[in-house]
Image 1 (spheres, helix red, strand yellow):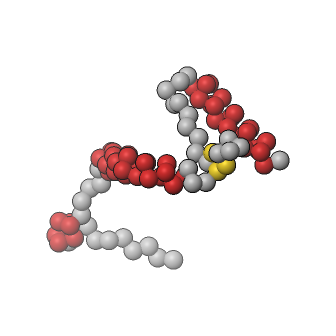
Image 2 (image 1 turned 90 degrees about the vertical axis):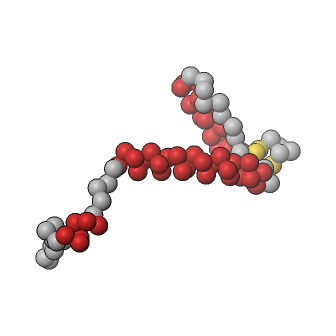
Image 3 (image 1 turned 135 degrees about the vertical axis):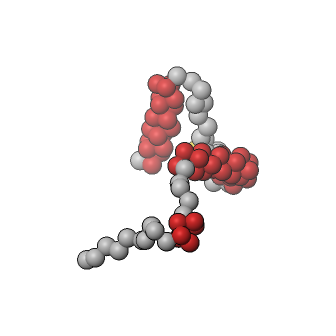
Length: 89
């Protein structure tokens, strides 16, 4: 198998090449995702409340306070997973 590398000495090609600023690209991607989440969150929450079993207190959407200490956040996640596992049995 032969690898063909693009020429780097041809002026039109070199003029079209742009260096990749990975930090900038990464930051803009995160910003776009956060903005998209903010726009869609309310609709997503409404849609998710259509599922689950509220009478038996089995919602599909669970809210966790991520501002708490790390072990409390993980404890909340663990409790939710345990309740789901228990309900499935």
